[in-house]
Length: 463
Image (tube, rainbow, N blue to C red; front, side):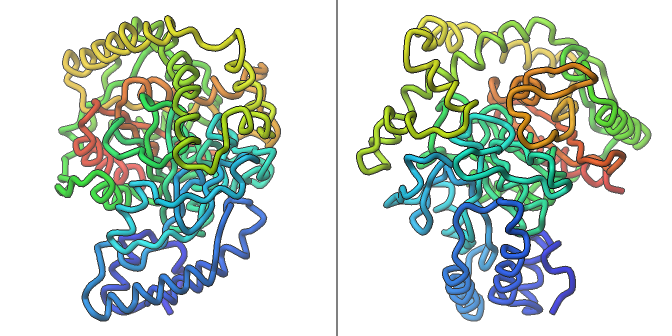
């Protein structure tokens, strides 16, 4: 048996399976043991050892017959708001705890078509409306790096499961930072593709304008493998020389009021990149922020009240929005939905202005910043601070001041989400006692360019 098997990513696992040094069943057995030993993290919502071993045996049979797909025998975990036939899809909320769907989400079907194995569904922030994954219905997800800290969210279960080496890779969803934030706080890679690159059919929605499925993994190389399947774009990632890369450092918002641990880690990484030949250029996008503020919440809050009832009608057995809201257990999430059920609901006029005026303006400013400065990407701290204690759902301490939890953690990830840009959070080399993420965002639709660049950057950061 290969030592440290659970620490390997999917590229290495596929290589070992191809060389018949391990079988899918052998890996599945170890994974099952890991699920039990790490149960205290509360990362997993649904799991079946019997089902996993059955699927692993089928994968081994396909491999012996040379009939297996490109991911044959690789187990993955999926956030519990992504439809699956073999496990309930609960979105972490009471009304859906026994909800089963007759179809898989398109994203899961694409991976299964390549003979990957859906091994489990991951715990999450209730209805994906938060960034701590402190779920009052299904319990809090604990951060593998420090059990007193939250894992981030809303894809906290997926990130924690990958960071704890329970699963080698997983799917999350990202509306305003929900893959990148937990990846940063748990010390793994989190990728949000350009909006529309992956299908969101069969995903419990917040906003069709902002939602996307995302990937959480141990390496950029593994993101590239999953991305090629989920997007249908099989073109290879190119090698880029570091001295060919120009990265923008925004002078507003992204670097303001950072926790010292984060600032030190980011400063060290930027210095290392510059020494290796990467060009760093300060840029300004001052006018973008008023548009961003007028876009993010108006779109999410208006569309959730349109999109979520449609999902319930299509994918549940008669559950309506009133029943769903009545069963919400997490106070922060209950407050959001209560505000949208009455006179305080987001006005249609604010939503239409967001879509018709503020969204296009943001994209123009962002694109101009790239073209005028010759940028390949912008780079910044994924979050302004590291993980805080479980239970700090409303406010957290940042540099001696109590600040609101949700907007503080999404401050740096939200802009890319609103523009529809691809973004990927990489773990910094450890210079603090908790993980710190550094994010690179590219131009919308230029995912291949960003992945090529980030693969090169990742090697520089870890060397």
